[in-house]
Image (cartoon, rainbow, N blue to C red; front, side, top):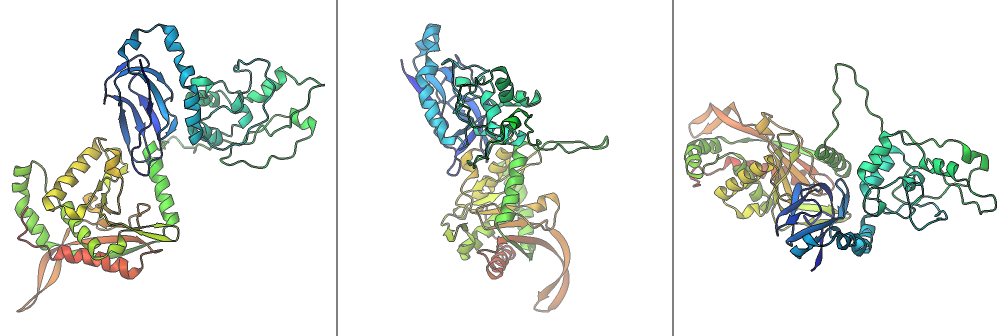
Length: 477
């Protein structure tokens, strides 16, 4: 009989933690190797986590909604199938056997916050009427506490229904909905300190949680401690009239909003525009799209042709394929092009075509279609979203002729591809200039002016346009 810890797996090179969205299995359920056990959300993608061992799910260590560091234990699996019929007493001892490991791993993701002096305990057993200083709080619980202005003193008195009396997301939200009555003051009123007992240093009950320790204010006069504590106002909810609808951002939209704000704050954006004559490209695609659809069972779009041109231009101007780390520029050897995809929900996600310069046009077409299709049905993996070195946004698919895209950090450039439009143009011929109908599109290139100057940013987008205008009409796909 063996007990195995199931840990939060690493789901990408830059992903350090994940949020448990939903447990697909419950305690006592049998699980097969590679069977999905829970759903986890990272800052890049939602995914299911499979079991690496078959057995019985004996204990769940992390509640839904909690944030867990990569490598931290999230469940205990009994690999001996006979454990399913073991006596209840044997299974009841399981939490004690793993409590130390769970607590040690929990310290890696806890936030350093000041604690009040530990009051004297009349009994080793704690209950909801007694404070629990030093108790572990997940980052999610601490974040809610900060937003709602809940003091550390009240948080320590808050009864927890999680493992080892930990406060879960539901516990703190129920407390908020109940009016956030001061638990610490209620406990003090119920059990006043004896006159001959040493007086603990008073702490401001209304002090909101901070990510870093702050200096404690001087103790207030004795009579001040009897006044009701005033908690900071919670985040205001916008007021709306009868003709308006209030919609809270979903988790993905909140992440997008934060990343866009961060990118504009970090990188001074400059955008250059070039108009490209893509008539030969359009004619070639119109000639081959039906045969390609019949042969491959999927559409031949302009996107892989445009990505191929960008990959070639990056080879000509490798200093556009970089990132910034402090005072250092990191030049990337791999050309991994991200492709912004609009989801049915209205949100955006950016899967990555790795080593795009090593794929031919048919390979790029299949990769683009595969990533776009899986993105729309939420089947992307973390590996599909990591490692991007340059990003493309096809605003032309919405009928837009140009745009000023925001850079995906830590990259330094992004290109928006406008809609292809017919226009009258001057055509130079050996017999003289003529007026004809041509197909044009705008390329919008936004770049980080910290490391990409106008000359590099402008020459790069011009080179992409050159490759599109010089497209070989004899190309085979």
